[in-house]
Amino acid sequence: MIQTLDVNPDLAKAQNAEAGASKFCPGCGHGMILKTLAHTLDDLELQEKAVFGCDIGCSLLSWNYMNVDSVQTHHGRTTPVIYGVTRANPGTIGIAYMGDGGGLAIGSQHLVNAAVRGENMLIVLANNTNYGMTGGQMAPTTMPGQKTETTPYGRDCEVTGKPAKGAEMVASIVDPNKAYVARASVSNLRSLRKTFTKALKNVEKGGFSFVEVLSICPLNWITNNEGTWDRLKTMEEFFDVKEFVQREGLE
Amino acid sequence: MTTVKHQGFKVENVAKGKADWYCFTDLCKGCGLCIVKCPKKCLKWSKEVGIYQTPAVEPNPEECIGCGTCALVCPDSAIKVNKK
Image (cartoon, rainbow over all chains, first blue to last red; front, top):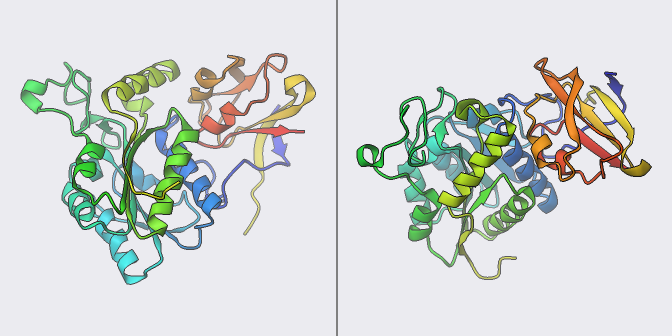
């Protein structure tokens, strides 16, 4: 029987308790990634120092998710906005949150330049292999043979080229002495929390962190709960889930 | 900061009386991801509905071991396992 409960949900302090249900679709991976990020901010007590920037696309629906200073920008410009903040206020923990469209398509030039220069920030890129907000069109990360709105017979690599692998690209251009680059997955949230802990500790030391998280999109994949986890397993076989670059002394 | 009261239901004494299991129906969207992730496969669709009027989930209190995997994986923090 539904009643008014006298207990509260297990929310992190860095999560906005007054927002109610999040604005994401049922089963969206963004909720899991942001929840884990908020708990990690609590663990490291960085809530007061953090600035959270969200990009356009589904990730902009996180504008009231976090209980930290937030800013929303357009079309991959989260990266320059956040490193502008950290350059103006040294000691700030800048977090740029974006999807695969914002990071690897329309905002890739910012990602590349921030990585080459080693800006002091954390970039979290949620990869769900399609453009979720506009209805599930083909994205740079769409896997070969995957059906989307614009590739109804499956992605043909002869015509469209090969999928972009963000973490490998960033790992090849960063300075290994001050960077942390990893790919994680929402299938293992305890491991994701450890990855975020390392990434945020690296940002505290003045380095550049990039974490690509393999995420899920049940509505546009048109999968039920079992099919969603199966598709994520296929993604983990295609995209390597591991740490690519880890500076020394990071535990 | 104001405190927000949540609507939901409670399954008492799961895991041989070692825990209470809560579902917040004003947060649960009925995605069912927890049903697949449950190690004992003891979660099933409930007769109660969540925020989008889709079925919420509830555990079988005899089989549930109170591990909290459902609470960890829920994207909307709609499940809470209170260990006594």
